[in-house]
Length: 375
Ligand SMILES: *Cc1c(COP(=O)(O)O)cnc(C)c1O
Image 1 (cartoon, protein in one colour):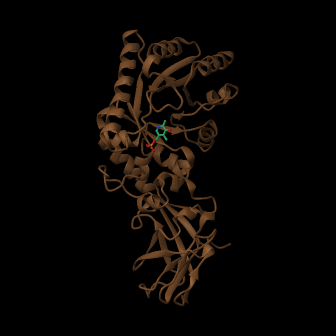
Image 2: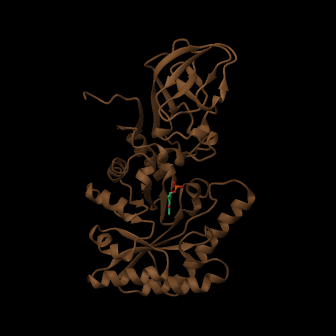
Image 3: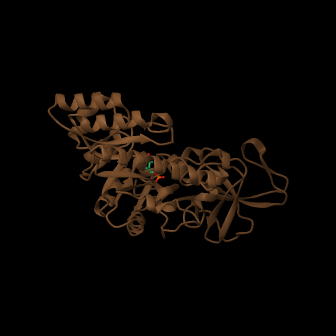
């Protein structure tokens, strides 16, 4: 094959990711570390390419969910600190040590098992302690009547041979959502985290890297940056009209119009007969579908950007194709490129049509779609 056919493809702008990191740096207080979150293949962008970009651009840490993701980055030559947010079964702790990774500790049982595994090898495992202040997912539970027990458990981890506690963190539930209740909930989570840190500090345990902010808190509660922020969405420009940081689009999905045809009035289009023309329509067939990661639920509810403006989508989206109305766009034709999302066709509109969030969209773009990297 001479070159990629480019039926449907993703253009990933590494330069814009670098720009977004620089904007983040300017936004957070001096001395605050910036972690770039590259889990889930860097939100669909491609984790090794994004990790190399972040490493060269001077990010302080990378965050992934699991050991396999971290190991892949090490094998690809990434040498900067990498943290695993999720659980790693103790039997794999040897790999975590070999790869020089930082492991999250979220409960007492894992802490003990990790310490034992590290000591058996005569080594020390670098960890960050995860505290649950109201997300109710994993982590040492600090809420309500569990506070004192949480203090004891965190201090026990700090005392454990074989573990080096480099950091401690919590995660917010609604820092990106509007409304007084959500605002108060976030303030309460933060206050609880502070109270815990003050207690363990008073008891003589100093943990160097304390962190709580992901994108929502980075943007709306900049005073909560502490020693490090964990930035996912911010790097991938999932900021919307509320974008306060001056971010640039990193992920553009494009596809080709493979054919154009005239369709008579009163004609049904595509499976399920969900759309019927009222007048003759000039219909373009776009070469992308749910096999490329576009959810079928957006059928009839989105539009694509063409060189002459927007074209409404018609009828049910198929595995490999969907139809658009080009009646008002006579100069758009076979072989032309459309933008499904990107700088013109808003990912936020598309996500709203699918009743989801942009990051789910990015993560859903399938392997069939080649990523083309632009510096
Ligand atoms: C995914 C994740 C992040 C990044 O969240 P964004 O909202 O995308 O910035 C930060 N911290 C943890 C623990 C995560 O799992």
